[in-house]
Amino acid sequence: MFTHVMIGSNDLDRSRKFYDATFKALGGNAGEADARGRLIYVHEGSRLMITKPIDGKPATAANGGTIGILATSPEKVSAWHVAGTENGGTPIETPPSQRPNGSFVAYLRDPDGNKLSARTRPSQ
Image 1 (cartoon, rainbow, N blue to C red):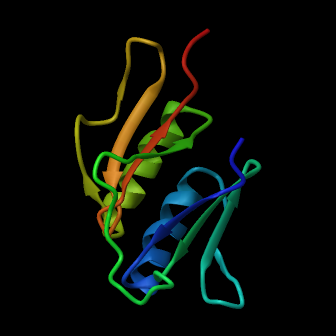
Image 2 (cartoon, one colour):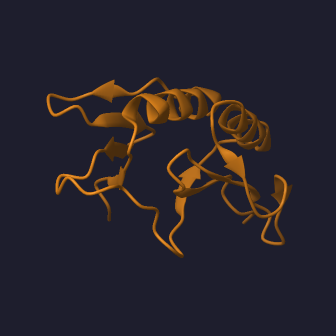
C-alpha cells in the first residue's frame, strides 16, 4: 500500500549516525543521500526517507505517530534497540519484549523525537 515513509530531521548528520546503526542491526545497509540531500534507507522492499522540511521550518515529531520497522528475529529487534540507544536514540515504553500476539517488540525515539518500533511478525 505505501511506497515510503518520510520524516523530518533538524540534523541530517545526527540522523545518519542513528539510522545507519539501526538499519545495519536489522541486516540492512547504511543510507544513501539523494541529489536533494535526503537520506534514503531501503530494506526488504520498503523505503524510509529522512529530510529537512522543505518549508524551512523546524522538523517536529508526530504526536501519537509511530513508524513500525519489520525485523526477522527477536535478536535483530534487540540489536536494533541497542544500536539505537548507542547512537543517539532514547528508549521508551517497555524494554524489548514479546507481546501477547507473539511478536517481539522494541520502541525508541530517534534523535529528532520520532517514535519508532522494531518488531517481528506476530505468531500465526
